[in-house]
Length: 127
Image 1 (cartoon, helix red, strand yellow):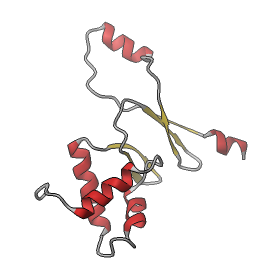
Image 2 (image 1 turned 135 degrees about the horizontal axis):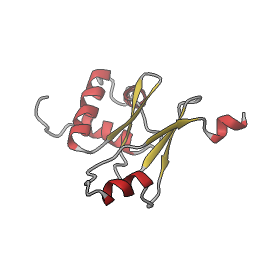
Image 3 (image 1 turned 180 degrees about the vertical axis):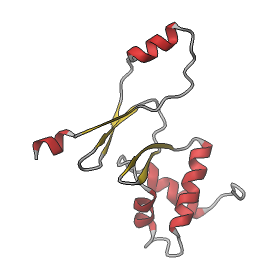
Image 4 (image 1 turned 45 degrees about the horizontal axis):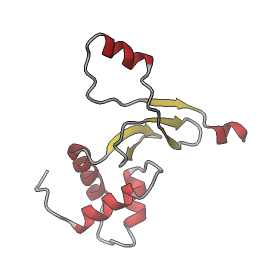
C-alpha cells in the first residue's frame, strides 16, 4: 500500500464508517459517498478500509451475505449477527465470560478478542 498521507477521500470514508452504528460494508460506504465524491471508486473504499484495519481504526466484525462488515467502535465488545435480516448489533458487558476467566486463571494473557454470536434477532422473531 502506498503512503499513508492525508486524503480527503480517506477522511470522508472514515467519517462515514464512524458515523453509523450499522456495521457497514464497503459497498454501503461507497453508496453513501458516490454522489458527494463522483471520482470515488469501490476499490478506493476497499483499500482504505484495509488501511484502517491495519492502523487499528476499524475492526472486521463478520461476513454477512458475502460482504465484510466493519466497526469503527474498537472498544471491547461483542456482536450479534442476525442470520435472517443481516443486521449486526453491538453487545456490551463488563463481565468476564467463563472462557476468559479460565484463560486468566491458567496464566494466559488475552491481547484481543472477537466474539460474534449468530442467530435470529428479536425483530425477525416477531415477524
